[in-house]
Length: 466
Image (tube, rainbow, N blue to C red; front, side, top):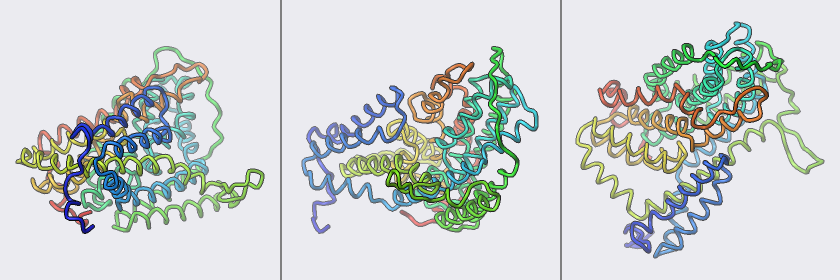
C-alpha cells in the first residue's frame, strides 16, 4: 500500500474501548454458548460474524478495517494449520476406521487391568491415540463411548476414568508433531517441529508420570457401580496401524516438512489398512447417488476440520482488526520494557498466553495471537526458540482441559450422559480430575521459577521469522 498513513493506528469510535468491543462481544458470546452446553465450534461462527460486524461499524475507516480483517485471515501460518487439519483429519479417520482404538482397549482387557489399573490404561490408550492423530477432541469423541461404560464393570472410579480420558487427550495435543498447538507454537517461534517435540518431552513426561501415579492410587471405584461392558470386537492386528503415525514422527524428526510427513502417513495408513483388511478400498471414496454427494473415509476426515478451520479464519480476522488498532504493538513495547531478564520474559510469555487462551477459548488461535509478542520479547531476553515454543504449548494444554467453560471439558462431560448405570460427570469434575494437565501446569511453573530447561534450543531458532 502506498498510502503514507496506512501504518498509523486504526481508530475506532469510543477509542480503545471501541477497538476492544468486538473482542468483548466474541468472548461473551462464546462463554454463553460454552456454558449453555454447545461446544461445537460451528456455533461460534455467528458470534464471530457479529463481532466483525461490530468492528466494522465502530471503525472510523471501515475500508481499512475490512482490509485488516482480510490480512489477519490470510497469514501463511493460518493456511498451514488449515491444510494440516485437513490432512490430520484424514489420517485420524483412517486410524479410527482401522479399529486401532478397539485394539488398544482389547489389549488392556487381555492384560486383565481393573480399578486404578483400568484408569491408567484409559490414560495410556487415549495418550497413544491422541499422539497418533494429533487431535484431542477426536480422541474424546472416539474413546469416551468405549472407555467410560467399561469403567464401572472393571471397578474404576467413573470420575477419574473421565479425567483419564481427558488427560490422555491432553497428552497428545501437547506433544504430537501433527497437533495444531505443536505446529503453531513451533512455527511462530521459528523452531523446527522435530526439535520442539524432542524438547517437549522434558515437560510432558514428568507430568505424565504424576498423572499415572494419581490414577493408579486414586482411580479405584468405591461406589459399587456395576455396568455391563459391551463386548469389543477387536484383535491385536489393529495395533500395526501405529506404524503410520510413527512414520510421520520419524520424518519430522529428520526435519522433513510437516505436509510431506502427513501425506506419507496417510499413504502408509491406506496401504496397511487395505493389506490387513481393516477397511475396503470402496470405503475410502464413493459416490452416494441417492443423496447426490460424494462420501467416504477421506471426506469424513476432511469434514472434521471444517468447523475449526472456519472458526480460526474468522477469529484471526478479528485479531487482525485489533492488531491494526495498534494495541498489540503498544502491548509488545510495554512488556519489552518490563521483561529485563530471561525469567521476567518467560513470566510475561506465560501470562500473555494464559490471558489469550482464556479470552479466545481456542489454544491454537491463542498461540497465533501472542506468538509474535512472545518471539519479540523472548529474543530480546535471549530466551531460546524451543523454550518459548514449549511455554506457549504447555500453557495452552492446561486451561482448556481444566476449566469448565472450554470445549474439551464440556464435550467429554456431555458424553457421559445417558450411559446406563453410570453417573453423569460435570465439566468441572472432568477438569478437576485431569491429573496430566495439573501436572503440566506444575512442571511449567517450576521450570520458569527455577530456570530448569531454560538453556534448551538456540536463541533465534533454526527457522525463519514469520
